[in-house]
Amino acid sequence: MEYLIRLVDPWLREVLTAAPAVMITGARASGKTTTAMRHASSVVRLDKPPEAYPFEADPDAALRGRAEPVLLDEWQACPGVLGAVKRAVDAERRPGRFILTGSVRSENDPVLWPGTGRLIRVAMHPLAVREQLARPPGFFVSRHLSGKSFVLPENPPDLRDYAKIALVGGFPESIALAGSVRDDWMRSYIEQMLAHDVPGDQSHTKLAEFFQAYALNSAGIFNENTLYQAVGIDRRTARSHTKLLTDIGVIAELPAWSSNRLKRLARSPKRFVADTGLWGASVRADLDLVMNDGTLLGRLIDTFVTNQLRAEAVLDPLRPQLYHLRDRDGRHEVNLIADLGARGVVGLEIKAHSAPRLRDARHLIWLRDQLGDRFKAGVLLHTGPAQFTLDDGIEAVPICALWS
Image 1 (cartoon, helix red, strand yellow):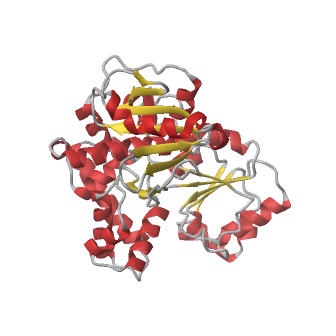
Image 2: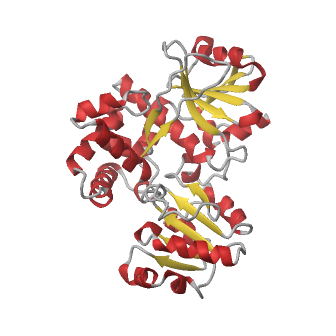
Image 3: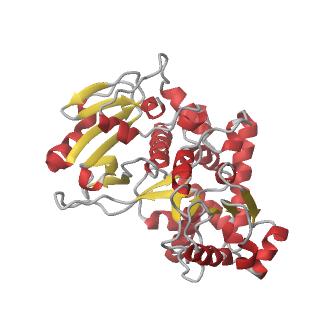
């Protein structure tokens, strides 16, 4: 399979000319190792016992003398290597020395996480549509604020096309597969994820039920009680499952946004499955089912668009922090808030509708009026073919502009 340029590639090239060590995290099979190898001069696969043994015995000695940048793949399989990287970097801080890939599960253990201040980190997501189409790296929020127009395709996708694209997902190994074979790959991914990433004291069956319940509520704001009561587990176990699935990159939470200009805002996060192909496999939803169920369709499109933007946000030059907004009464809700710090705020709404009207932008209008000059733009991303102005500072933009 031909290599597809990833959003992270330009970032890696740049950062390795200035920093001694970088870490790429993300879900299994999202392409971390393949991409990192293109920037490395030597590779150590620490999930292979023969290659890991020297690093378990004497990591400092094992690290010396290798062609740099050295890729230390699946570092969490031999966590002592982080100490060796720290000591090597402290001794000589020249750029482009180490690339680490793997899980983030050990970050909260201070014994296993001496990388603070020595490693620059980036999260790598499954392939965005822009990457799948081999389009040059681009960033929607920055481009929209720059005032540059989006060059839309002559035959843009319609709602069914978007649902079909979303259900393919973004795992490099699966996108080349078709139909039932791809479905089998996704189901195998879930089974192997549970088999290899679940600690021995957790039930595989309960975690599988938990993940399915989570997926059924993707793009939703729901209380933890909903999940643990549905699955039959307690709060502590539900939180443990959530942390595990977050750390291995298959779910994500958008925190609630807050502002001293707005009152009575909900504080619960909005929860997502991190890949819509994985979502489809988990809830057993194919294209026909989704197109005949408005609830599933809405969750799919919302999850799909959010994941496209999440993949960009960590690399966008403006580094937007993504949130959601909802007031406690449920009268106002904005799907995504891109907070640019001192630069202001961009509000984004997602509508599975081909001809949005002014009333569809009412929450963005409310946000604009509440925030004043802090509100920099509002975007209603929709499934229709055209871009047009809905109101002052608020544009309706086809979803395909994300990869135009």
